[in-house]
Length: 113
Length: 115
Image (cartoon, rainbow over all chains, first blue to last red; front, top):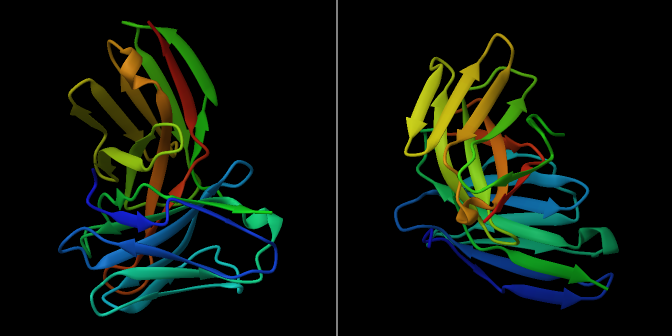
């Protein structure tokens, strides 16, 4: 158990809909990262937050947005969903400034029908 | 875009044999990390090697890094059935600003260890 929690575990929705994925980092970790894992694209970095502020941005679509709250939990919002958004979404957390290991949550499996 | 590219894509060995996976990358890095993922689960960090290190050991794992060739290898010795998983290399690159960096993952090597 990494100490990172993600909810829900599974999400099934329809095209055009909007969903919110939630992540709680390990106790004491200020940085949160979001990744998307799909069969064709592999594991793609989406975005990083540190203590409530956006720090780095990867291959995140404009339809996707994220935020980190004062209690350090983070939410990833996916809107206008398309079939191609079906994937595993992982959240990870780390200690800031070490460029070190990241601790991954169990993931949310999103299926868009 | 993928920074690390693992080779081979899939590897099947007998229990007790050694498994070697390779990773190549394109740009300069702060460090290189290896992660393991059991089917559909979260990734688990295995080992980190800094850009100024050449070799590192952790239990049955041995990692090498050749920055001149932009490549790394992960060796798992005396493999066990429980080592069956996908293994990913990830390169860490810094952004401007303290604590801003990202990990770029390869597509992974799927290892099957046959009992």
